[in-house]
Amino acid sequence: MTDIGPPAIAAGEKETLVAFLHYLREAIIRKVEDLPDDIARTPTLPSGTTPLGLIKHLTGAELVWLEWAYLGHDPIPELSMTLTEEDTVKSCITAFRKASAHADELLKPLTNLDTTSHRENRTLRWILIHTIEELARHAGHLDILREQYDGQTGR
Image 1 (cartoon, rainbow, N blue to C red):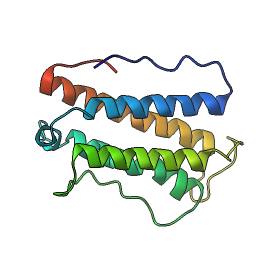
Image 2: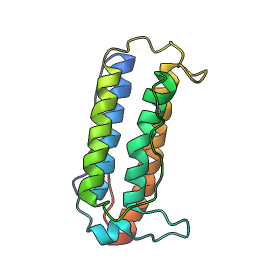
Image 3: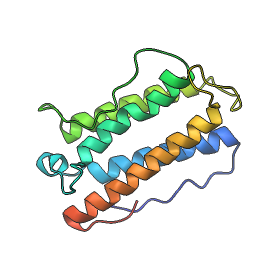
Image 4: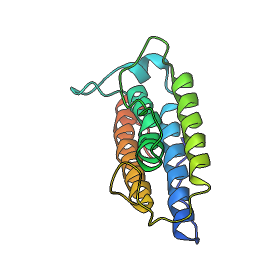
């Protein structure tokens, strides 16, 4: 796994935040994409956390804040880490990429980071920063799970 560093960007606030979202999404995918399905489904921690469970959770996390909380759209996206028989590395990454692309489309017309969300007393800036924090925290969890499996480290 080739290590990738954070984006080297000199841009406005929104562009910088979105660049970090893209960077973290790809770092998350890189931690999971070449794992065998059985390994990606197997918990190695007492909490039961798995690589596939984390990516499944993150598939909804970004949209909960952006689509449901900020824009006020229903229904609330799924946040569960519970896997079904049909969940595979390929299917979970495909769903994550689709949700990320949808989030990008929702973000495109939004220009004022100071506007308050529909359901929460949070600005778009807060939502973007919180989403980055959520992705980064779980990317760190995936770092640990991946290192436990095969010793690979890096972003």
